[in-house]
Amino acid sequence: MDPAQANPRTARDDWWRTAAVYQVYVRSFADSDGDGIGDLQGIRSRLPYLRDLGVDALWLTPFYRSPMVDGGYDVADYREVDPMFGDLTDFDEMITDAHGLGLRIIVDIVPNHTSDVHPWFVAALAAAPGSAERDRYMFRDGRGEHGEEPPNDWESIFGGPAWTRLPDGQWYLHLFDPAQPDLNWRHPEVRAEFEQILRFWLDRGVDGFRIDVAHGMIKADGLPDIGWTSATTGRRQIELLGKGRLPYFDQDEVHDIYRAWRPILDSYPGGRMAVAEAWAETPQRLARYIGPDELHQAFNFDFLDATWSADSFHKVIDTALAEAAIVGAPTTWVLSNHDKQRHVTRYGDGEVGLRRARAAALLMFALPGSTYLYQGEELGLPEVLDLPDHLRQDPAFGRTGHSRDGCRVPLPWSGEDPPYGFGPAGSVESWLPAPAGWAPLTAQAQDGDPDSTLELYRRALAIRAEHPALRDAPAGDGTGLTWLEAGPGVLAFRRGDDGGTDTDGGAAGGADGGAHALICVVNLSGAPVPVDGYGVPLITSAPLDGPPRGRLLPVDAAAWFRPA
Ligand code: GLC
Image (tube, rainbow, N blue to C red; front, side, top):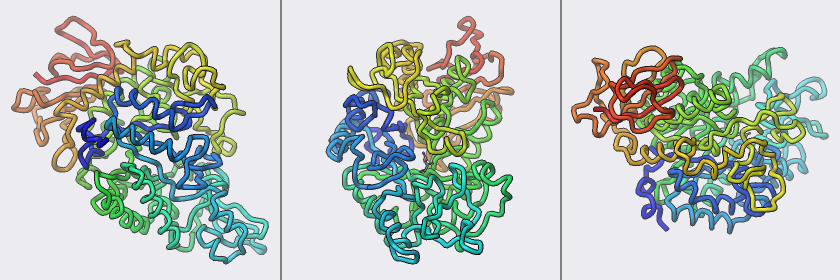
């Protein structure tokens, strides 16, 4: 069925501008066949849950054939479903049902590197140095008298050198794991192949792509050294990811690739889009990825990286709005994903972390643009910090001691004990074990409980979808937010009267009496703040204190108001 009939919000071609997109980490979402691993039929069976949650689209992390060295970001066949997740028929059934419910589907595309078992790399290893087969990847001779030194000083994002040497003496580049060789994007066959892969999935009905390491495909001519010392390289490399100019990130030529991809997306009907996982030094450079001849969106990771303080959020929101103004399109907001510690834990863990995470959700959902949720945040899941080392699968763990497994633990759906309904009755233990003590966090336990995080998300997303101040893409430059003066440590802004100014700092503003406006207030000040001046509360992340008049927004809480 056409999404238009099920969900008018996702029927528009520019649905992505305001969409609430739910990231499904396929391996950990829902298991249909009891093998302890999430799969496509598992997603299909939970689509009604996602529709009821109120999201508009799903982004599926890679489910392609893969040896799973990096959780599927090491693709062996870009046109096949890995048997652990199902097959193409399962995919077709899943996307048909999703569209029937008005849910759009975004898939991940991994163009910077393949798996080392991809047929191209297998052929490259079998061929001689200098061969056409090797030219699709980044093979080089080493330095030193016998070529025993790597071709340059680049380090892998996962730690250690970015080069691995073969028995025949040549080296190949891998910005990530050695099992993820980097492709040579100056090779016409590589470009042609990925254009065909895009078409393959567009033909199957996908609505968009999340582009993995979208700023990484082109490497600077001559592969110059970075020039770091052995004492700082590695550590600084990771810290600098996205923040400094590196010869393998954000090279100007990468934009040629997207200028070739955009006409392909535009040649399909129905609003196909692409969102970049790209890091750039400045908002201006990030903005270059976005526009009518390149991509639709880029993730705004500064919001995710902001610390729990009003100044920090204020600054990153302003920066993002400035970027939106440059490109004339609203930005994206994200608090968690499969690479980052869950925000409940980042914000302090336990009760404090959860309180703040609930407030952060109201903050995020009130901002102009689209919003990306990571599975399980609607349940208030914390990071699982105490996974036994031998179960951790992140390839970065062995090299850096840092692992991303704790945010990838399978979702708790129901019941009292692990794996909490992740699979059908009688399933084996999930691939990463869910901790004891998650029974109160299951979707079943939270369903219908007005104080639960799940119900907070459902209510907030429903208001976001219906309220005139939040539901439409802001006009003009894509910003559409007016800050209100609210005292130290308090964020307060008004939406819904684009171009309206509030120079006197009063909360009411606007000439329409506020029927179409909405005010969001977040209290990061450490003390309760009076909120009577803002209007009628629509939703709060924690109950307001005090009598009906003289109401106070508690510490680490957020609320939305309809201005009087
Ligand atoms: C992206 C993915 C991450 C993966 C890496 C290499 O950053 O989000 O999970 O490890 O790319 O593909």
